Length: 160
Image 1: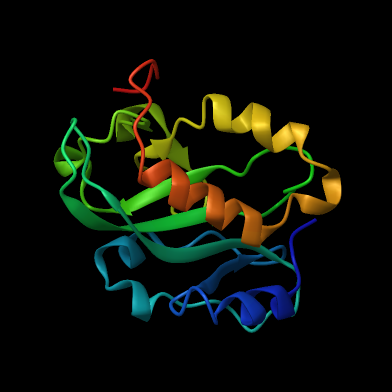
Image 2: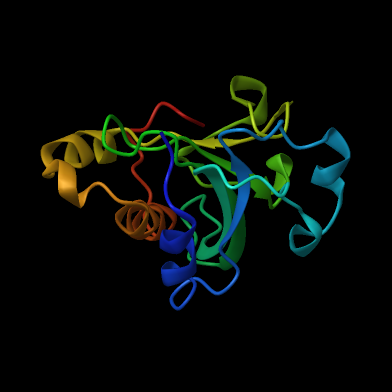
């Protein structure tokens, strides 16, 4: 499915660096894109629905410390109504992530970059997502969930 480009444009007011990474008819990102700065990531000229976005969100570094950092994320928007979206962390690098709710890269393949990347272990957030009315399961809600997720740690999480 995916989301409309207008949804991405509208959310840029609150998430200024939010951008489409892939559309339904796009090919996955080239592996070399990962090494480049997020602002140089590109999309093809396709007019299809947006199926992945990238965004930067501030959160805690983790490891029971409140030091803050920026997380550059790729969010799968293929079917937000069916399940909480998969989220991969492009930066900081895997070895620098201490947040206990983020899976190490070796456990998560990102289909949009064709590489292993750290990913969110949504754990109980996923239950709350499905408990919400379907009309509330939007990209805006997913980004708010990501903010909450990155600013708390659930030490019962199986991720790290």
